[in-house]
Length: 195
Figure 1 (cartoon, rainbow, N blue to C red):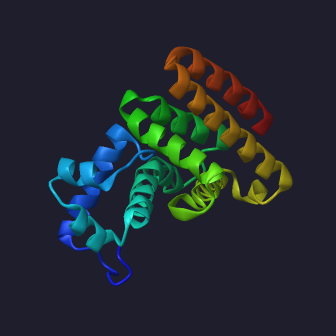
Figure 2: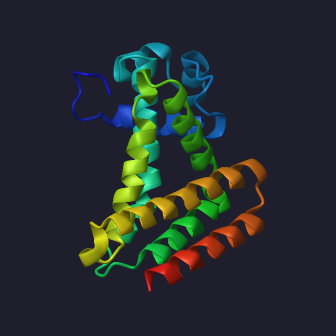
């Protein structure tokens, strides 16, 4: 969003959604405004006006991706009773393993990696923010009396490590049955440790 626009216009929202679909299909690594603008029925001038510059557009796309990423996590937070860490991680994995989420997860992996190797610019803070997002949601799924203990923090970090490692393996190999079996194995260990 350009600095002078607090609330996006309908056209800005429409172009962001079109650019997001483009990014899901083509990634962000070699994003060039001219081909993007042509593909979404706009111009580089309009994109520059609406998003400030290419970095502003990339930041807007990363925020848009986080909305999709967090959608499943927010559902877990809205339940009346904490579902437990292993159950929450199992539900997250089911979402991750679904074929229709691969484009989003590839985009997430690209942004996460770029944030680590290019800590300045539009990627700045993306990796750290997404770790915090996931850890906060996993914490909300743990029983409240134990949530703030060091042991609970270690358990949710372990659950996140399993999910993230499995996600990268799934993206690299597309071997969903093998990776899902490994995730279930690890989550059963986590579940037995919760009891």
